[in-house]
Amino acid sequence: MMMSTENCSQVRAPSIGMRALHVDDLPQMLALQASVYPPALLESAQVLASKIGAVPAGWTSLAATDGNTLCAYALGYPWRSELQPCWNRPLALQHDCDVLYLHDVAVSPAYAGRGLANELVSQLMRQGQQLGLSRAILIAVEGAQGYWSRLGFVAIPTGSTDPAFGGDAVLMQRELAPPGSMLLDTA
Image (cartoon, rainbow, N blue to C red; front, side, top):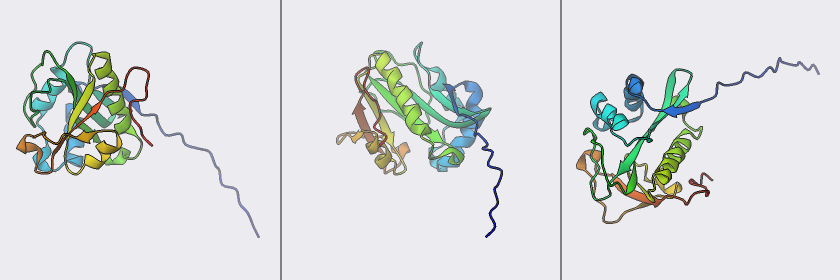
């Protein structure tokens, strides 16, 4: 029996960085969005720019990057729970907000399965806590209700959604964890 030893030098994968999402990211956001959503759920550059910029001081949506490549993003912002979130409409800065609205979390298929969505959501939820918000809401689309349920979100039985989100859209919520506790159960 003959044995050979291969060169087992490990190639270390570049680390994924997390940073604030910028308007300069729009071209890559549009491409990423087109790779994960059906055409009816694509938002325009103008709308995405408004959702990056129309936020209170100290707030940021997030980007996960691999070098210069945007591999995931999460758009979230303080919101007023009595207002119905709308799809593909420019965002205006809201005042007297009482909830965190998680508008969009998108992960490139090439980076799926690495926990990027959970990390981005967790960071947005920490920001919500820092702003004194006690609850997060979102609209699950394209069958994502199961994913969000695993993160502690529950459907709001009386919640209605903008028809532009699609017929299977579900309004969901969860309490933000008190400071110092784990925000997401990723088990």
